[in-house]
Length: 542
Image 1 (cartoon, rainbow, N blue to C red):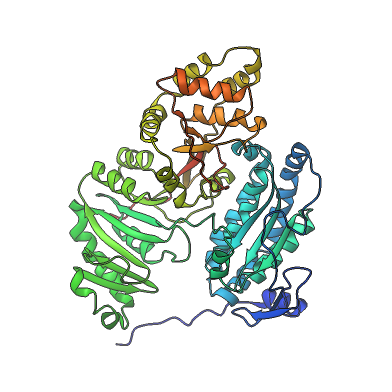
Image 2 (image 1 turned 135 degrees about the horizontal axis):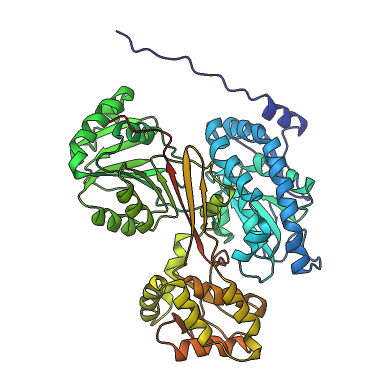
């Protein structure tokens, strides 16, 4: 009997086509455009200036005098208006992404648009407290060929830390959405947003434009514990995205249910196995079984080179909860899809895993409170930031102290820091430390509970570029549980204060280093945000 098939649903693209028509299929990226042209995936012509300069300080919008505090005060209202504009043009963005980059409309709507709107709706005046208060003139936001649309939302984080002018660097298949986004920014008063076109990502690397923000490559790990709804977990894993940082990279299944999981997975994955046996023939001998489902390759007990195939998802067994947490820490996974019916077990895993986002009995759900978006945006840091430690000698001791310091109760940390802050010149600093409580939150509705936690960074590099107005935040970050590594002298009296911390305390993780390190600018956040979203809308079938 022939397999029953549904007709492919036709996607409505009238809004995107209308936008292209009104813009004459042309997306000039700056005022000197017209020297060269290129075409995107839909055939739109893009005119651009091949000699466009990327040097810092040469933005077409630079040179204005702006008061930092007035600048920050205006952000909240503008971002809320921008959230309204993005919502109003949501379908146009979705259709553009479908026509040019072939991204399904539902993914753009449920992931990118939802995250951007949540981030802009979140109280930006409060979020600026999460960032150091130094003032940068100019920064880039790069949108490569495979960069998710959601990254555009990070302009809020850049402005929140005092970046005055932002240039969105786009390639041929992101030029259209970047141009529309720039128009919406200008419509609400963000005239400090500009765009520039490059022919390829290689050109970005050649010109040393940072490809930072939303570039986490570890993906999402799926975890299946005994007693959970295995069928629902498998159905979810088979339909996961391959286009976002939370793409599924690995599935860990508790040993006691591993055989049952493999049988159920084999049956469901084989329903879309057209031509898969032939395409996987070269690697099948390296694993117990292999399946091709849509654009994903699932390999059971794979023992070969992880880079030998495309979007690969390894399926493996684990024995104990302790072993599972150790594996998650080893892979430094930012996203976790945890399937469990035992509440105590689920909480033990979720709260001990180092992941920024934990979905319990769900995956890729961003329909919680607006604050939850900060687990995505506030944690948009390149993994290579951690490599900075390799260039700093003798930092092992301070990192060991940080691990102990982070586990010390908040009130004990507050007391230790305040005891080392004496004198009238530190009164403002003491007030800031005494008022610090973190930004935890809990949101509950009929289908989901969402918990947000403030978590420390492992370390932050501090040098003379962080002016005195930002020192309060660095002291509060110590209170949060992070380590401070000072690479250049700060302004007096704050230099003396941090020197005292480094000299007089055996507990506080502060150290000086004479080694100059060029730090990624985006690492200016004061803490990480962790979100645990628990779905209890269904009671499991088995």
